Each structure stands twice: as structure tokens, then as C-alpha cells.
Amino acid sequence: MKQVAIVGCQGIPANYGGFESMVENIVGENASADVHYTVFCSGIDMPERLHEYKGCTLKYVNVKANGMLSVLYDVCCMMHTFRGYDTILVLGVSGCMFLPILKLFSKNRLVVNIDGLEHKRDKWGWFARWILRSSEWMAVKFADVIIADNKGIQDYVTETYGKPSQLIAYGGDHAIRTIDPQKRDKILSDYGLLGMSYAVCVCRIEPENNCHISLEAFLKSDKHIVFIGNWNHSEYSKKLKRQYASHPNIHLLDAIYDLDILYVLRSNASIYVHGHSAGGTNPSLVEAMFFGMPIVAYDCTYNRATTQNKAYYFKDVQGLLDVLNQNLDGSAMRSIAEENYIWKKVAKQYEQTY
Image 1 (cartoon, rainbow, N blue to C red):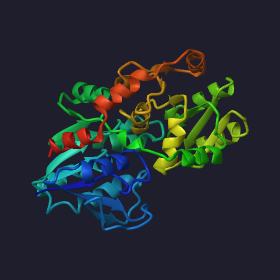
Image 2 (cartoon, one colour):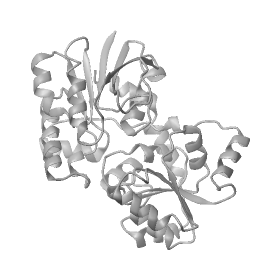
Image 3 (cartoon, helix red, strand yellow):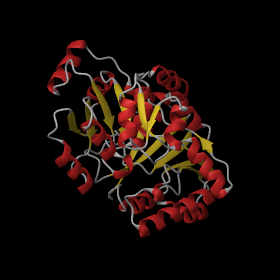
Image 4 (cartoon, rainbow, N blue to C red):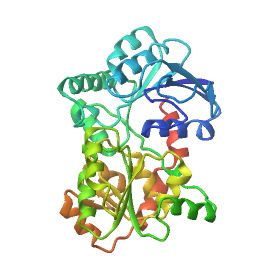
């Protein structure tokens, strides 16, 4: 049996972001019988310490997994992988400056998902960007396989480093489930949305996700939006909450990890708004495509690649307003998702790199 260690996520069960959801869905029932996963988790960030989950072994490192501590966290996880594994799957480049050492003392196969060009994100200062840019270079140089989750990222690797990469996106079919109609109505009623037509957005409240553009456009429209995110995370998110929470057509909800509730809120929406401008293929966009509703996305290479240029796109407040005033059709989104973003297929693609 092939032993695969996964480092670079906060841990599973997933309760944080895209990498965590990905790990949860490539293991378990979607994994082949001849692959055994060990997932390294943050002993500080995870609410409980399970030793096994979905057939995986879970191991813990007592370092926070997020922010600049993610560099230390990833390195500490890698230090536990010198022996006992055939392949190390590294998610993100935060700790990849350690790869030369890992490569020197280990015969493990290194597979690195370089994520969404982290060094280009607005939230980092110059020093953090330098570290992340250097780590990206190390990842590309020392990895046996480089994974890009989006055609835009794959093109960047080719153009910047002259190296090939494997294109493996995220799945999103886990977002679809069956809910009892009475439970559905109760959830909608609890959130004050029963019988209401609304758009929905699910994201981290960060400038690069253009939350300010989406909120301002809906403020100037007569349409409702349910905006789900971490509203108390930063000064940016807190400022937006103070500015927009009191408007009757804007519904700001804290992050929701209950998939039943998310399913109900998304399946009853008429439009999905996606403001991400960085990060490759975004999991929340892929998940939304399975609902077959119109997708209105920020106009960038990554979003166009994910939706195959068949969504609607905006760059500013007026552009979003113009789109909202059109008759929108989302029928193409589900067929694209079902062809490209099924977890069973994604899990098999990962296993082929081991």
C-alpha cells in the first residue's frame, strides 16, 4: 500500500478553507484502496484531536497553521515525514524553503500544489511576499510534480519557470445534498429568507475578494444579497460590516460550515456573486456552479478559466449593476461542473501523481 503524507492544510474534519475541503474529499470513499493517507493537522487550530478520520491517520503539530506562522507550521509538519512515506503531498508553498533539506535526507516523492500565487496577494507586506516568492521558486525547483489548480496558474508556471505542471482543479459535488422540505423551510425562516429572491456570496472578507464592490453595487440596487463570511476578521471586514449591515437588502452572515445550511442558502439563491481576483480555481465558485444558477464573477483569468468564459463578469460597481439588470442564464454552469469538478475524478488525478 502506498503511504502518502499530506502537509499544508489546517487539518480535517474541514472547518477552514479550500485546502481542508480538498483533503477531506480526496480521502475516504473517493480514495483508492491501495493508498493510505496521513494528514498533518494543527493541534492549536483544530477543535478536537481525532486520531483517525475517513480512513486516514491524523497527526498533530502544536503550531498555528495560518498567517505567517504557516511557514513554521509547514516546516514542522515536513520534519515528521523523512521516514515512513512514499509520497509527500505539499499544499501551498509557505514552507517550501525547507524542500532542499527534505530532498537531501529523504527519498520521498514530492508533489506540490502551489496554490494561487500567494506572494501576489494584497494582504502581505514586502517581506512576507519575498519569503513566499522564494518559497514558490523552491517548490518549482525541488518538486517531482507541480500541481496547478487553474489554467491561469499552469500558464504562469510555464512562462515564469519553463517547467511543466499537472492541471488538477477542485471538486464541488460535495455541496449537493438532499434536505427534507420542512428542514429547508425552517432554515430559510430562521435566516429571514423564506419566500425571498436573493443573490448569495460565500468568501473570506478580504480586499482581493472585492467585497466592497459587491456590497456597494447591491446597495445601489433593489436586489437582496446574502453575504456569508468572516466579518470580524480584520479592520477591512469590520469596516464593511459597520457600513452595510444596517441596509435592509444586505444580509451579512458569519461564516457557515454546516453543509446542510449552506446547501439551503445556496440552492434557493437566484444568483451567485464571486468577487475573487486571485487564487486560481476557487472552491466556493466550483461549488456554486453545481447549483446551476447564474454566476456573476470578477473579471480575471482564473474565474474565466474556471467557468470557461460562460459566466457573467464585472470589474467595478457599475459593471456589476449592469449585469444584475440583465436576464441571466446559469444553465451552462452545472454541465461544466459535472464534467470537470467531480471529487472522484480529482482524487484519481492526485493518485496518478504519487
